[in-house]
Image (cartoon, rainbow, N blue to C red):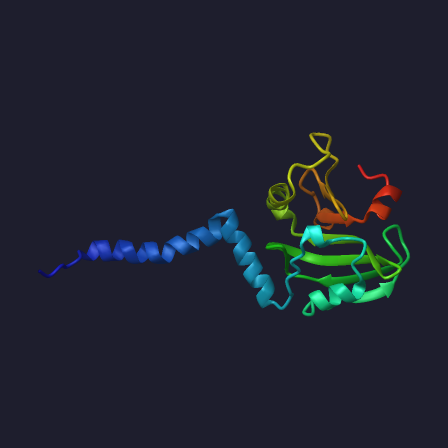
Length: 185
């Protein structure tokens, strides 16, 4: 018995095979995120996948350099509210979300703060991933302040509302010493 598929059926099937993935990439949030990640990595920026539970004040600058050899940090002495030294690098992503930059602050060669500049359009995804991975935040709930997750080695802060400007799209981790010095919202 010979089966012959109608020409119209073959045409519809071929169109679905081509249009389906294209539609997913262009019109779904997950598809757009994956497209952005692919393009950012192709353009040469490395990924920076960090485990929040491993962020502690005992992490040294050399530990980060060893853990992330592809990330080219530019380090300099810059005394400020977060530490005495800052190391910054352009990154393509962190933890599977498109990003711009990572800044690590050190005091006496120990990690005191981390700023991750993410792409503002992924604020909702970032908040959801934090809620999934770290649980419900301790603070936040309609005041327009910050959501806070208390960890063993510090506190993670994220703006409660999506940022209006790209420069405001920042995820912060603060060591206990820095968090107690600053009046966090």
